[in-house]
Length: 637
Image 1 (cartoon, rainbow, N blue to C red):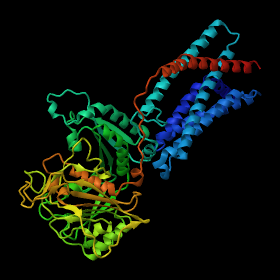
Image 2: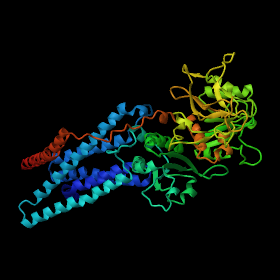
Image 3: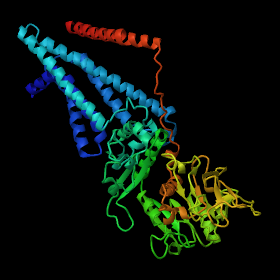
């Protein structure tokens, strides 16, 4: 046993710096893999090696009746501090109440302090232990022949060059799955709050990014890639590459929608500039359920890059969260289940399929579950899809009580029925009222207004990408200022706050109230820009939310399959996403962008010259000489 300890002590004395470097790098890397047995195995092995170093040195010194050198003890303290700082910082995440204000959070400042402590401690350990090992080798060959000196020099050079592959491997591992901090995040990157949220994703997420390359095509007209996307493609790629670095659960793949003919089979209609996030469901799926949950994010030009961070975080939260229950009222002639052909123009089956992909479970609300009556407690949102029969007082009360409990409601008015949702608008303290009208914006399509007139709102963010985004809005009227009811309605309030009203969707300016239904403006016919969609929420973004549309056709097969570049599916998906948006994502502050250009003045040139040519080399030489002098003085004593 004594001989074994002496052998180990000799090995640690000569090459301990490289052994400990390998062990600590393995330990740091294993922190990101502790969700599986492989990570724990490497963690345990590296921890054993790290602990064995001081244990062996102490036992060897005691067996020889000597005292352990203070230099060895100092390196042990430094490496313990480095490991502790790294472990605490890795596990110390921002709390939810500080995410929206991460730059000023005390926790963020503490994490930065731990990062600095880790870097200085680890660098100090490596340099100090390296000098000790070199000195140990030199001491052991004092008085030997020249050949021994040459052998020592050769071994030292070999050990230094042998470390190079180790550092190359460590650098490669950081590009695959970086357990440390992004020291050079680039112009577009994830802020600290976003990184904290993304790190918390507990399931495997397949992130497929469609990006163009400098490609040659026989017919350039076949390319659907936006021209500006070629210019920002590398910025998008750098942003996407950070996902598996932040959290190893993200499995990143790149594809080119213009060149990949299989993409349409796997993803349907998809263009370059699309992020597709998918999470496979657990267990068997039957009926209308899909085997995976999907959310798409779009980026086509530089202005979209400013919102990409928040959209990716929203998508990650949605696909990794438990399923949401969306109830559809189905007792007042709504479009929940259209009799006859399922894909008839008035059906909403395509929209329902798109919502199921987004981790929503759709359920009818009818007499079989005591409707009209209290909305089920497990309802995350309620959809009223074009009723043709007026709601009873009991049904209205149930909907309003649900909103008072913080419920989320999406309502679309059917012009063919008497239900105009005035009671719902009154409860939101809105003066808008539904006006039944035949609207035309294109002579070739009477009664089907086509619009790209959007206001800035959470619902319209994805509709504004890649320039103009047209929405077909058949079977509709519009909203206009109405008279205040004589009886005082019950106004929805929360914490003495009233709901804030935002009109986010209008018709185009040349839309006509087409009384003779010929698609053209005739004398006496009113024309203008008419409201089609209005959203309500409280100023603090918490509690109940409400979205009301002045038509039903936009979410039916007729509106979704209209032969224009329309985005009705995105409008439906993002309307529900707005209603059920996580409050953390709603208050997320994107990473502040730094300017790309740095003015190079004469003073800056001179300062860089002094630092690079004089200060840095001189300080390096002085520190090295000082360390050697201190070590040799200690050895003489």
